[in-house]
Length: 489
Image (cartoon, rainbow, N blue to C red; front, side):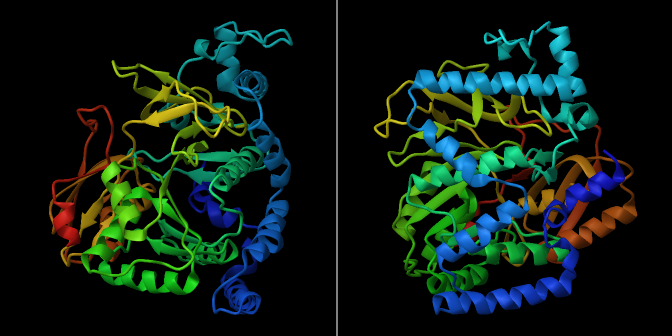
């Protein structure tokens, strides 16, 4: 990847915005206008009717981006009425089209398919994915140009680096639109419509211009955000006050972040009943049963679990009966199974084009369940075992900061890293640099981190040639031996 491409990737949200040319002052003007518009359309300061957000903002913006999302919503909605056999035929056709595209447009897959002598003729309905080697993100990072098809409109994305190694890659409009359409269909299973008010528990941009764009995006999409980098008690209490006035229809965010929010409110004896709240969607990491129970007890509503990834979008979603269904936009294999049937999940994203994700190893584990769901949808049922586990950094002043801040800041400088915290005043970070990570650059990064972790946090960088995995085989980029429960109280 060239320097220019990397710069584009790291500011992907801003560069991809149709409004990017208006500048910061223009964004400020638009935000002020939207504030008035929201007040006029609902009658309550800062609110917007979902029908306005959906039909006057969301759908027109999709058209500006070249995303015909209504078309794909219609296509995917029809799949719910298919039989399992009919769905298998649909997926087989999608896989064949994907392989043909990959062969004709990428260096890597052309070489692979030739080497394995996999024919792609019109009679090739029996193509077996198992003859294609597994794909890991390190392989893409090492030879990005061999995977990329550039003759499609795309956006640059970056994973958060939950494995300590962020992947920067292009995502084409067709793939994005299928993923968005599938997400909205899955949400509709629980009565959530496009434009419904959302309380979001997520990261926040580091750079100023990206912050303005994120604020604009939150306004346009009718949502309020609590930054997971600022989860101290005062911030949580302020956010609760905002939500009581905002009346969100649903929560959406990291499992651990929503759990922490619930735990902080409960520890202070705060009444956390929020008018209008009906659903809670947990995503981004494994949802443990103790977390699900706590969240449901505090807010009084059922938690819905979503399984997905930055690379491939929504992969699985719980239906109204609590079973997690595999989305028809992906083909999932379970490999290297243990005695319980759990194995590593390998994903083929059926509509990916700018980078065809074929037999992509996620690093998550799961197994298929051979049961019939009362919802009667033809989609496979999957159970997730060990997923991404995120944590919090405890600061010297007692503040808790989501560990993803490490990935947000370090991904510009290091290829891979791992941080350790044994006490609240010291953080050790071992790393493999992308290039030369000089002491001067390290000091600048320390200052950035201390903006969030306080100036009293001592940070040590140690360059290494290799970083070991956990004994389980999973990779965690932050390891803390501190007691989170005692920190909350």
